[in-house]
Amino acid sequence: MTVKQLSLPELTQGCRQFGIGKVGLWREPVQAYGVAKTAALVRSAGLEVTTLCRGGFLTGIDPGERAAALADNRRAVDEAAALGTDTLVLVSGGLPAGGKDLCGARERVADALAELAPYAESHGVRLAVEPLHPMFAADRCVVSTLAQALDLAERFPAHQVGVTVDTYHVWWDDRAPAGIARAGAAGRIHAFQLADWTTPLPAGVLNGRGQLGDGSIDLRAWRGYVEAAGYSGPIEVELFNEELWARDGRAVLKETAARFLEHAA
Amino acid sequence: MTVKQLSLPELTQGCRQFGIGKVGLWREPVQAYGVAKTAALVRSAGLEVTTLCRGGFLTGIDPGERAAALADNRRAVDEAAALGTDTLVLVSGGLPAGGKDLCGARERVADALAELAPYAESHGVRLAVEPLHPMFAADRCVVSTLAQALDLAERFPAHQVGVTVDTYHVWWDDRAPAGIARAGAAGRIHAFQLADWTTPLPAGVLNGRGQLGDGSIDLRAWRGYVEAAGYSGPIEVELFNEELWARDGRAVLKETAARFLEHAA
Image (cartoon, rainbow over all chains, first blue to last red; front, top):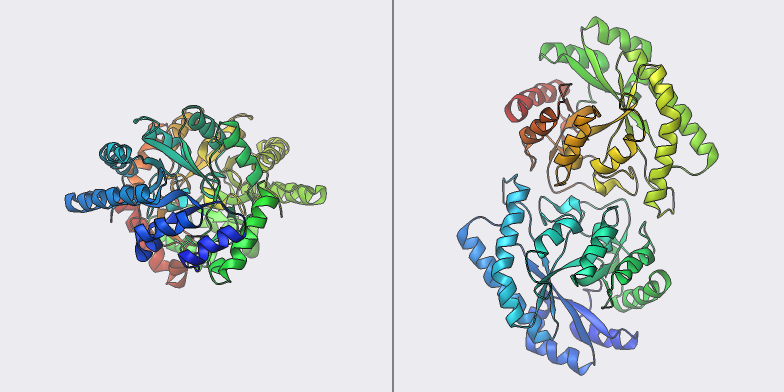
């Protein structure tokens, strides 16, 4: 998503050129290109898929809406399996229209996980519940802290449900390092993502994630927390940023790889 | 601040007309009108000043900057005393330019409180540390949760330092009700403010606070939490909202009083 202006063939070629051996993919471009075709493309480039983003949006109350969301999440599991990744990132969803009950919405996420987790396991896929920054609590993700994500995940076996740690979403939280230790001890850190925090935030706040090193987050410290907790998996860089998307995608990919080495290696 | 388009005489007249017996003031309009003149105006209208907003911005590292911030906060204490309110709301300030150390910045706030709290007490004023929503952690307030605010406040006697509970800033936090109980038990809820959460957030995210009832916050529930914790003080409505500021201020004041009755009474 950091370089969504690139086609999947351009992306895989760029990864090879810049020494990036693994790549996290999003469902929409994969579906547009074709799931099997993407899997073949990635394989032929010698790349591994780290995670598939994203399932989720499981907070609806309407039965038809819930059934559709669950069906879509089962398809996401199928896609992850086809791409050869063992991890599907989940963003829970926000409040239903007119809703004010965050606790109730979080419980509906738990109910949905109970249906999805066994299905995912049977396809060799783990679910990675991602807490999003509290500024998304109303309209995108009622799970706002790592502690909340772990409270959900711990109702299930670790090989079924864990968490995604994204620096952009947790950097402000003085309890997040303890949450990372708690997650790591149980083998529940299923994905680790980097983005920096820059201000001012743009309208809608979705596409303001900063290039590594441009913002307020001590990225190396957060990498240290997850590694001290036993995490040795891939590190993704996930930037939603209109300015980066407006630039040449290969230049952004090259810059991002260099920034990773400078600020997180 | 909800109706900053009104002059102070218009505001006090409007409060009387709409049955609002107490009013929270901000320093800038008070300074522009004159502190003594404002105090006389409010007194002659039969109003009480609930709180003065705001002191703070105490995270600087540069000694000259820190000295200036402390001096400005002592002036804020003087102004609060002159206005007859016992409560000065403090917003801690964000990270210094280029900074990434939230914990260090919070410690500098604690150091500043140690200097300001005795001064405030000697003028009959309590400090009310306000946690701001985590989306302001970098550029406005490194104190992002009620728990963090209490960790700071509890280093001092409750009659010197407490907290401000603002629904806009804490509504997403499942630990905030416990924080309210903890604050109330120690007599540290020094101010309680209402605003609703509406989306999409505007660019810069500062001026998107929703009119009561327009958003996702169960305001009555939060009022219940503070009252269950023993709070019986005034309830302020503090809306930073460009759309409200563009309207007739008296109409907004009247609407806000009606919304309060509908959604929080």
